[in-house]
Image (tube, rainbow, N blue to C red; front, side, top):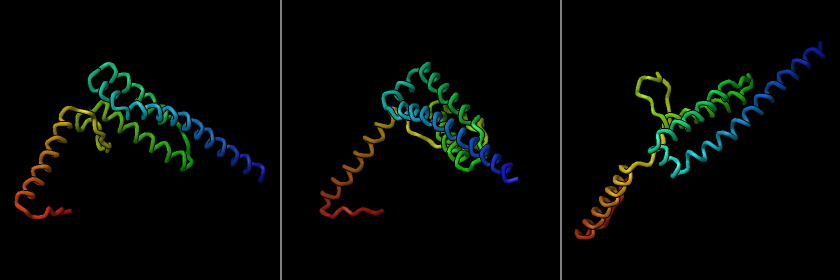
Length: 147
């Protein structure tokens, strides 16, 4: 009886270790994708080049399917897998956005993609702050910040 229980324990542990090993390999690939995704010039190229966007989307989908296929009853395996899936889905949503309602109730995080409108908004915001400061100087009052 003791030997039977110990063998069952070894099997469970080896399955968890195998899943963790597979997750480690997938995590290394995710790190490579994250480096590309966070590279400003590469993201700019993805925005402009449809073929490059398709290649990057395929890489994300392949890794997403790979991570999703990893089985493990261990809490650590499930948590690691869930966080990787969430991050990959968020990247995929930014790279290849889907129309609303197509994906159901799945919540996704949003990332900023470099666009020309973003620089215009920043410039307008800075100009507005400068105008506010100039008006305060002309009025002779002190500038108060309200949070």
